[in-house]
Amino acid sequence: MIQINEVIETNKMVSAEHLDVRTVTMGISLLDCIADDVDTLCERIHDKIISKAKNLVPVCEQIAAEIGIPIVNKRISVTPVSLLTARTGGAVKVAETLDRCADEIGVDFVGGYSALVQKGMTEYEREFLLTIPEALTKTRKVCSSVNVGSTKAGINMDAVALMGKVIKKTAEMTAESDSIGCAKLVVFANAVDDNPFMAGAFHGVGEADCVINVGVSGPGVVETALKQVKGADLTVVAETVKKIAYKITRVGQLVAQEASRRLNANFGIIDLSLAPTPVKGDSVARILEEIGVDTVGGYGTTACLALLNDAVKKGGIMASSHVGGLSGAFIPVSEDIGMIESAAKGILKLEKLEAMTAICSVGLDMIAIPGDTTSDVISAMIADECAIGVINNKTTAVRVIPVCGKKEGDVARFGGLLGEAPIIPVNNTSPARFIARGGRIPAPVWANKN
Image 1: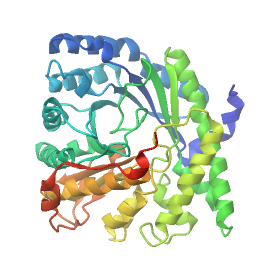
Image 2: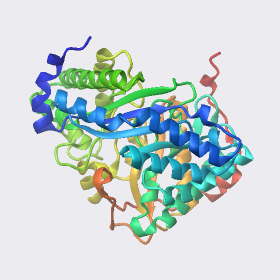
Image 3: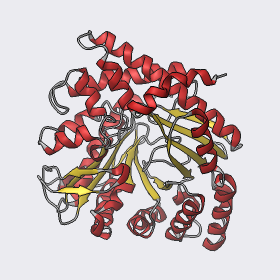
Image 4: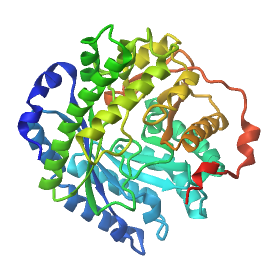
């Protein structure tokens, strides 16, 4: 039983070091909404989401006021829409229903315009993927994700090739706002069922009917703690991060317990990822620099990230029996002031970011690239990230934004938590022959564990 006095010491963390609960995400199963026509399906979806989540925002605001910890985002994730609309079609109409629900309830985003095609695609699933640009253009709060690979299945290269085209089309359809539609679209390998963070959240089919997943964050808290051990060896650094991660996770545990009880939902998981924002003092890059890298992106960055990620996980696992989601450190370029500055100087490059994705929570995240980047190059980026995830049995992802009309050196501005990002150069040597082969990259030999 967590006592309120466990979080009293966090007052300073909140006021000066940007500690917050980044998101409370309610996962809702919509499998019982499946119908024979899309209008009935949409009506059932609307009624269920409203009935389950109508009190989500006020309950989160009550809890935040009571314990003095900001809860920045309130979100909903749902069963992958491709599973709901296989019989009826009309997926875009479902997306619009989800967007309407988000507005009525007052949440920030709804995740789950998703498909799981890691081993193969039905003809309907192929058609569903092609609806993503329209769905993200016609909605404001709906997020989309597609799982195209897993350690058990390998990599579906037909889906990878198609998603390069889908990303390009989404960029074109939202060109007037710096192609922001792509900021709501992520392509995964080894996607997890209980991720509370957008744009990748969806409610897995193995989950309970209604679940509360909480994502905590606190890069500023970790950075401040490390400033107190300047000059100490790396074992001391790791121990310091572990202790802080423990405290941060206990805050999330308290919020998750209270939210699930008050909302009559199952307590799912705590995702203890360090998620940065563009605000000064809330940067994962600054933590890596505090550990000792002169500028993030320089040599040593990946090793520092490995230390940080491992220590965060160890501290969090001690604090909660229900750690899940992605849990580690995020490196979204546009959302981290340190990453933005390093990328603008040309120090943090795509190749280094790719190396860091072997360690971090996700992958190539919120990276703005030239608008004339080809779909084949984007597909090859996805394939490389999937390979890292599949071979290392971890979640990896790609959320890149080919910003229409902009080139290297320009800046894309998305606003809010999405921040802004310099357009970084891309290696444009053509992978077209590789992507055109299609088929499936087989699962690695150690996937055969049964």
